[in-house]
Image 1: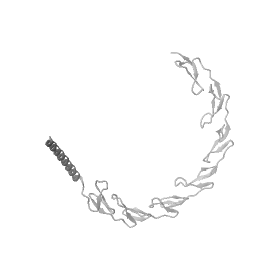
Image 2: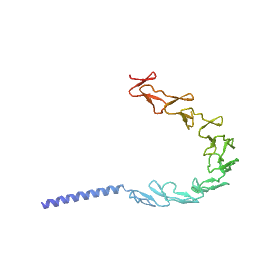
Image 3: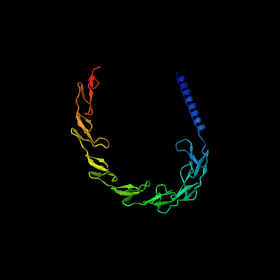
Image 4: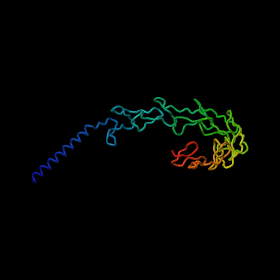
Length: 256
């Protein structure tokens, strides 16, 4: 029995060693050789070019940065970038030409922006002409200026708003709205005529009043709703509908 145990143990060790050799051989066959000017990847697979070299096919070729350029740590791409204040033009780094009334972009360092009060054109910066009753904005788009509160743009100028009685300027300051209880008619604010059994409705469009619950609008008045038998006021309170299971037929609620 002891001899059989030794034989079984020997067989297990033989299988383990053969498996280990197989795996080691398989991994060894799949490992690519590390070329010159490169080192094995720290993650255990493949390789990376050293600083100053760029990967091309299965080798690392030297990278030469142009004047006013510097090498990067990237093994792919061109392998270099231009210094601050220079922009890539082909294989060169040329100084960024900053026109009058402009400054070098502090974020990119390879382009320029116009000073406040100027707008960019194809080659430089044009002065923004600010009309009377207006002020400069920080936006590089549109006109570059806005009208002061109480003025509106008309033909490239800022013209004073004519705010009628019972009206007020909005938050923007470039338009007006009627006070509560008034509505616009012919550029004026006139009082809303609220009929009996109704209340003022502060809506942007449509009728400015709403009938009370139990009344319905008929022309410019609110008439009391007369409920037919087996009916009730609807959700709005200004109409009615039949009780279940009655159905509407010819102005009445009837069973089918």
